[in-house]
Image (tube, rainbow, N blue to C red; front, side):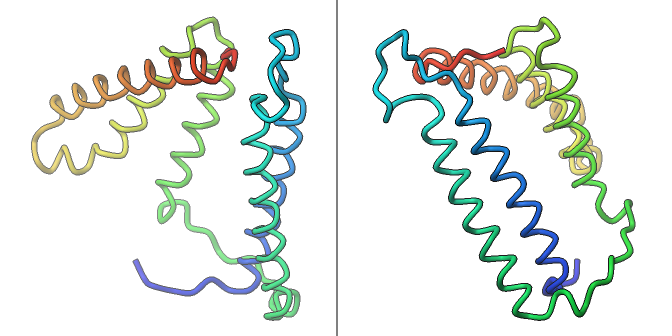
Length: 168
């Protein structure tokens, strides 16, 4: 992979995407359950940390937009050619995340199992080439499943029991 600096227009697009993501995070954190029925303090409510992270991401997105505009992003408006084969990892990760959020969550599976399935498939796919080259595909599948079950259980325990966040 070449070590190229992104164009100002690419920075402008990235800044707009980060800003949109940040706004959705802030809105999501604002609408989270504040656990008032448990008499939880405002500062320990589940949406505080995501909200602060969303604000930080929004500030970084705005800084990226401003920097790109100062570098002449609007004068260089040109959508770059995108070869999907060069970005298969990004597109695969995006497809897996969408499958997890739109397909697995809310499907009736317990959260820990849905997360474990997502993590196992993710790890297996992204290690497949290396495992195939080394001749350890079955071992890679076993490692992915064990790793996913540990992660799924840990994520479930941390959010459900420690942070008191109700998971779908």
